[in-house]
Image 1 (cartoon, rainbow, N blue to C red):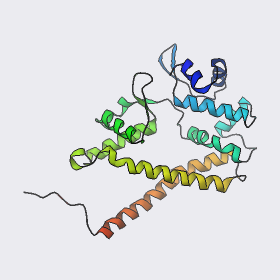
Image 2: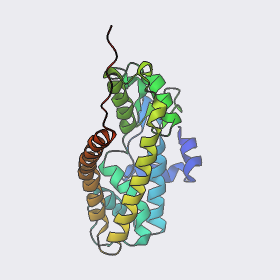
Image 3: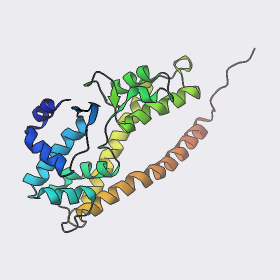
Image 4: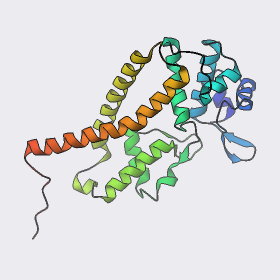
Length: 237
């Protein structure tokens, strides 16, 4: 999107947006040409977060910069600070980086265009075509690439596997994520400083992914045992 689109999406004028850039509060935009800047959803979310921190929390721009970098340590989390955790954690995960083109996934998934469309249909990823070229976040690009690797392992349409079958992963992930966040916020309310909460959330995302992966592996093996059946091999002539 262009600057005028960014203004419309956020309700913030370009002069103010440029001030945010000068303070280093927003990621640099992609530039298809030296004098042409392309913005994305990360900039929209970032501007909205800055406005909330400024208006609702009364923070100055330098203080907001310290919050984003994890340096501000004089405030404990209350209910009002919860809306900002997503952006703070995302910043630690580099989710404010510019989008990558879908074509960058082709080496890992030659079927990337079709698979990306299918994954977007079930809500697993989001693609942007504002620039005329399909773009997606690095996380979503990795999801498309992983499904390409699954294809290479035999999970193909011919063997009965389509992206539609992955919808239950999306549903389960949303439910699990919501429960995790609800319990996390309930536990830390009024006890943990802003930057510590973001660091804790990042630690949980990284470590509990492995924790849950082990639980899932145990559950899958038990399910196979309970079913008393292993995947059947095709009959050989």
